[in-house]
Image (cartoon, one colour):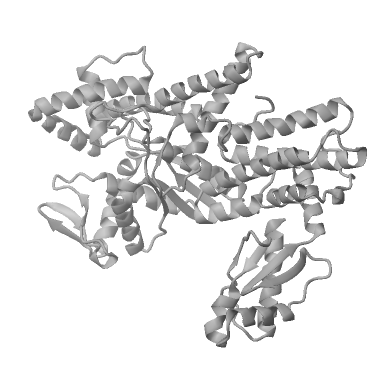
Length: 568
C-alpha cells in the first residue's frame, strides 16, 4: 500500500504545481520521522520563485486538493516541509491485502529478463571467507529482483582455462589427490603444493604456459584434463553454496566462448573500432577517452586471449539474452570492470550494472588461496553452527538433540547471511560470530525469533478456538488504534517499497534493515498491548495483525535467504 500512497502523493503534488504554473521536475519526496511522507520541493523552487522555501510551502499547501476517497488523510506544513499522512483506509487495506496475497507478494510482473552473475570464484580450491560476501549479495539481489517482478537468471561464470586451472591440471598429474576429502579442499591441497614447486623450480612454468596455449588451440585431451579438475572443485563449491541456501540457475563455462569462436569474433569487432594497437607483440585497446590511462590487453604476443577477452565475449553473449545485466564483483575488480564497460560502450553494446563490494574479513586476519593461508567458508560455517548449538542448548535445554541441531543450523546460516548483507556493499565489514549470534541484538536470530513468536501466538489462539488463520477476513481491523498497532501496520505496508528501492539501487542491505525494523516494531506491539488476553472483539483484530506480521516476517526472511522458523 505504501507504493500506492506514494503514487497518490506524487499525483496530488504534481497536479498542484501544474495549476500554480510551477515546474514539476523534482518533487523530492522522502520518508520522514515527522510524517508518512515529506516533500522538500519548496527548497527546489526557491531560486525559481525567488521566495523563501517556507512561503512556497505554504502557497502549495493552500492549493492542494485531496481525493475524497484517497489514501492521504491530510497535508501539513512544518517550515519548508510538506508533510503527508495516511488515512484509516490505508491502514485497513494494508492488512486486507496482506491476508489476501499471503506470502506470494510481488511488486509487478513481466518487468524483463535479468542475468545476474555472482560468485564466479576460480575453481582452484574451496570458497573462503573473502568470497562469501559476493555470494550472499548476489543471491539476495536475485531474490529481491524476483520479488520485484523480474525474471532473473543467476549465473556462475566458470574460469576453466586460465593459469590457475592449468596449474590445477598439472598438479593432478604430479600429486596424489585425496578422495576422502571434500573435493574442493583436496584440489586446494595439490594446487598449493604445485605453486610451491613452481616457485622453487621456475623452469617448469614454461609447461604451464604450453598447457594454456594448447587448450586455446582446441587440444581436446588437455581440455578434458582441465575440465576434470574444474568439476572436482565445482562439486565442492556447489555443496558449500547449498549450505548457505544459495543456488545458481546456470553455469557458463569460459572455454565455450573460445570454442564457438565468440572470442575471435569479439577481437575482430574491437579491431574494427580502430582502438586496438599492437604493442610489444600484444594487442591492446586504447580507452584514454573513457578516462583510462592504462591500455587493456586483449591478446598476448603468443596469440592467446586473456580472461578479460573471454569475459567480453561472455558479456556480449549475455547482452543478447536479457534486458538487464548485473555483475557482483570485489573492489579489486574496479579497474577491469570499468574497462570492460568502456569496451562494450565503444562497441555500441549493452553494459552491465556492476555491484562493487568491499571485502568481509575475520578478526583473525587476511587470506590467500595460493599460499594456503585462508579460512574456508566450510570451516566458518562449522564454527558458527557449533557456537549456535551452544546457544540453543543454553536457551532450550529441555528440547531434543535433533531439535537443537536443526535450530543451530538455521540460526547459524541465518546469522552469517544477515551479518554480511546488513552492511552496504561498498563498506568493508568484519564478521564477528559473537555479535551475529547474539539473540539480544537485532540480527538474524532476533528476526527469526520474532517470526517464531508470531507463529506461537497464532498456534495458541487456534488451539483455544479464538482464531482460524486466513479465514477471519470479516474481522473489523479499524479498532486497531494504539500507537504501536498503527506503527506496525505502517511497517507492514512498506515492504514492497523497500523491495522496489533495493532492486532499483541494487542495495540489498535496505531489506536487511527493513526486516530488523519490522521485527522490532512487532515486538514493541507485543510488549505494549495484550493479544490473547484482550477482550473478544479486540483479540480477533489483534490476531489479524499478528498473522499479517507473521506473513511479512516470513516473506522478508525468505527474500533474505534466511529460514523463517515456526519454533526455536
